[in-house]
Length: 184
Ligand SMILES: [Zn+2]
Image (cartoon, rainbow, N blue to C red; front, side):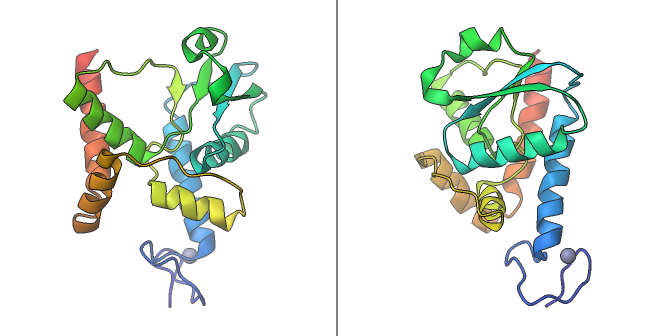
C-alpha cells in the first residue's frame, strides 16, 4: 500500500485516510495549527486548558503545547468539573476546550433545535476541524490514555450521515462559521 500524501510504500495504512502514520500525525497538527492561527496569542498570555480526561482534552493539551512552544505562554490546566467557566474565563486570554468537529456540528444542531444561545467567545476549539474518529486515531498513535465523551443522538445521527456523505461535517463547519459571522 502507498500513502496518498508522500507516496511511500508502507506496511500499514490508515484505512479511511489512506495515509501513513507520519503523514496522518502531520496532517492533524497542520489542521490544528490552522485553527490556532485565528487567535493572536502573544508572549505572557495566560491560557487555561480544560481537562475532562477525554481524548479531545489530552490531544488538545498535547497539540496546544506543541504548537505554541516557541511562544512563552503561561499555561494552566484545570479539571473541567471543578470550575465555573464563565468566572474563570475573565482571568485568561483564552480557554482551550475539549471539543472536536463532531461536537461543533452536533452542538450547532442542538442550538438550532432548542433555540439556545451561541457559546461565549475566547474559547479555543483546537480540534474544531478534526473528526472525533481522527482524534481517537491520533491519541492511539501517541499511546495517550483517555476516556470517551458520551455520544448524544445528534452525534450518532451525524456519524451515520458522514458515512453516506464523507466530508459533510466539514461543509457544515464552514456553513456554521458563515452563520456566526453574519450574526455578529
Ligand atoms: Zn505518508
